Amino acid sequence: MTAYAIRRFLSLVPVLFGVSLLVFTFIHLIPGDPAVVMLGERATPESLEKLRKQLNLDKPLFFDVEAAIEERSIAALFESQYFSFVGRILRGNLGESIFTKVDVATELRARFPATFELSVGAMLIALLLAIPAGIMAAVRKDSWLDLSVMTAALVGISMPIFWLGLLLIYLFAVNLHWLPPSGRLDVGVDLNPVTGFYVIDGVLTGNLAATGNALKHLVLPALALGSIPTAVIARMMRGAMLEVMNQDYIRTARSKGLAERVVIWKHALRNAMLPVITVIGLMFGTLLTGAILTETIFNWPGIGKWLYDGIGARDYPIVQGGTLFIATVYVIINALVDLSYGFFDPRIQYR
Amino acid sequence: MATSEAYMRTPTQQAWRRFKRSSSGKAGLIIVGLFVLLAILSPFVMPYDATKDRNLRERLKPPSVEHVMGTDELGRDIFTRVIHGSRISLRVGVFAVGIAVIVGTILGLLAGYFGGRTDMLISWLVDIMLSFPSILLAIAIVAVIGPGISNAMIAVGIVQIPIYARLTRSVVLSLKEQDFVAAAEGLGAGRARIIFRHILPNGLSPLIVQATLSIATAILDAAGLGFLGLGAQPPQPEWGLMISKGFLYFTRAPWISLFPGVAIMVAVLGFNLLGDGLRDALDPRTSR
Image 1 (cartoon, rainbow over the protein chains, first blue to last red):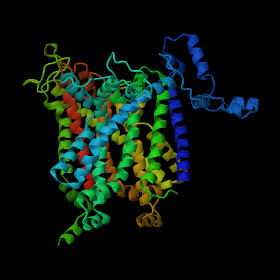
Image 2 (image 1 turned 90 degrees about the vertical axis):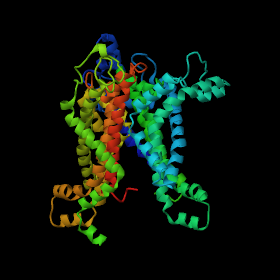
Image 3 (image 1 turned 180 degrees about the vertical axis):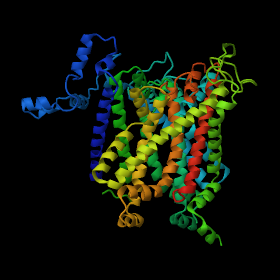
């Protein structure tokens, strides 16, 4: 198990190397001098020069062969744009935003809790709806209940998430005034961020009014973002249940005279959960990294909206740092999901 | 009697029989058929012009007899624009998936058949692409090659390449050890002939199923890009773009965003249903 875990994480190294290459190349793929691209046409020569120095744009892209031969040192070979870029990142320096001058790593840390809170909310909604729905649909296969759950799931997958978000805002915020349409807190609600998770921060600081307010803001975006996981998990849950319910040990359990309730919830569910847990893990990775549309519509100050704004403003340090961060989180979560098989299913032998 | 009848049928006939028994497949086929028909016929049957018939006196009108879906902020008939949007979305879906299938399948065939370093290199590229959420990768590609409907199409297509590379690779790996491939090799068939005449046709079923489902995803992703202003540009009647324009008048005129969204949903639902039905028909072992 440990050996497998080590190997699984080592396998991330070439992938992350490729990701860094891609993110690095991104800025060079855009036509024009990167310094001009980053600072804009009206930048002063001094600021352009400063940025070129800072980004090592006067050095070769990948390998400084000339310097290596001249100085007869292998170290000089790596004094290139790419390797200084990687070196900077490994030291945790993601650069600073061109426009706001805020450190990218600091901004990431500040915004990640917002995205995480939204993802957890979406996943909770998805699990609460999808697992019971999927089980019920499987138990009453081909009934009207099954048909309506599966139809709803298919519609859920087919809806554009930004459109669902607009409908939710229109219905619950504009018309019914039940819930706020955007942001994380009402204007005027005071909250001292401790962890950055506003729902928890409110409890920690004894400010339950703020927790309630944060929860209200969370409902609509979490519903919109949770729609696809709900649909996918419900379909998966149903499929897995149907497969398990046909197996011999279920027949044995029934013939022992166990109540159907026990057979379903104790015997079948345990084994049906394995593929579902995989999907839940992968989905959570997608939620954490892919909430760009949802965050934009609900004006949610998370990573997705920040990254989208960064792309729109051509703020390349944000694009590079944010993309790199997202890809890293995503591949690590996928690796953890792989490793979790062994925990949930002891029959699996890692080699 | 029944078995001998089944014995006489070709695989295509058997698949068609299974497809006809799948209610989601039939529903999907009807929706997709109507969608395609609409896309083909839209230039001929419409009472208004989708982009030019502006009428500021008629702006932001709710649905009525003259304008069944209402009018937008420039007084254009939304029903006409939604119908014309079907052409754009169908084209985006088909072309994007075309790019993904062609490039992805070739990469998967190479990786699966040759193995070794070729496989390592291609799998590495696939893993890198899969480390990004698809919408982010599409946004980044459009940021490099510029916004617009054609570029959005390319971006959405590129994003889906890894799916086909992986799928084809796994199909090739399972097929290449089979006897009929060994027999073809023994008879002296060349590599290209083995790959394209023997392996690819036998692995076609999962590819067809996946391509149908991919059109659904491509339509959704392209609409997302349009919504973000990175896909189709005004005044094109693209559904995602229409929703984002309607967003500005949302409290006063929700119908501007409502109907294009319904159109996206129905089109995507159609391809998803059709994909499920095709899986029942072509791949009976994996269907539930």
